[in-house]
Image (cartoon, rainbow, N blue to C red; front, side, top):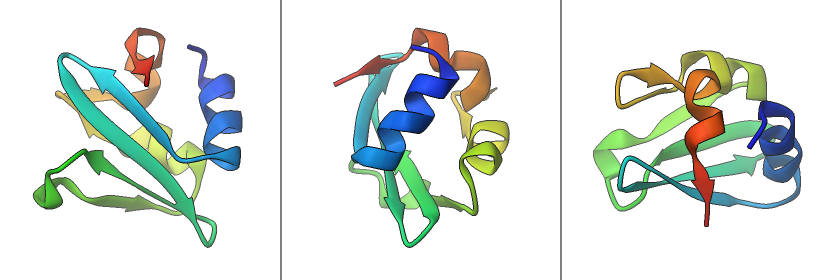
Length: 74
């Protein structure tokens, strides 16, 4: 998946994806991105924009923008 594809999909629907055998969610609510590991309330993150999320959301010690080509949308 490309970053632009993820941005478009996140603007139209909630996203669930897998990476390294874990599931993650992204939800856009009132112009804020809420994301984290599915089922893990201790891993809740919020970001003010897609760019903020792709630059600063760290998943398994890597930025979202660096792993987007390796995620699998469910």
